[in-house]
Image 1 (cartoon, rainbow, N blue to C red):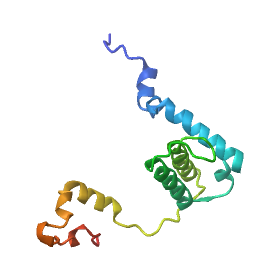
Image 2 (image 1 turned 120 degrees about the horizontal axis):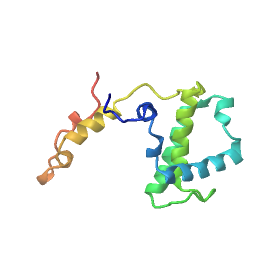
Image 3 (image 1 turned 180 degrees about the vertical axis):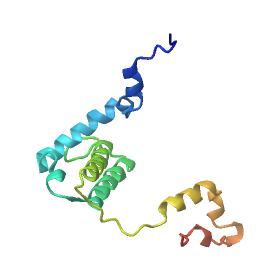
Image 4 (image 1 turned 60 degrees about the vertical axis):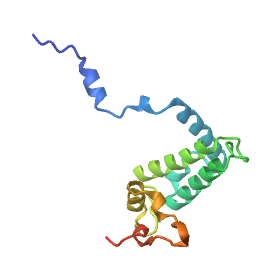
Length: 145
């Protein structure tokens, strides 16, 4: 006789994506942004005609910039800027998974490695030194791989 009392369904379910970890506020607000987009362009329009990734990256960046600059709700929709940015990301991911995404990003750069290097460095060392001398910042530029 086994002492394992775990339900087999629990074991199978534990191996699947844990959708309950997505905050309901994200789902609800993003649904509001998606409803706004569906009114303007039709629901799931990106599945009918392929979409360019940079269009949605730029839109997400605009919404995040407005949010960072102190505006919570988009003036045209009344929906939170974070929800619009999440909707943009959701469209990118869905279009990618449905093979409806045109990847028009520029050639790969070094942003990820630059962020990692700058995170590990003492950032104040990049600031001009007392007496007007500036530290050489060549090490902060992208390096060829």
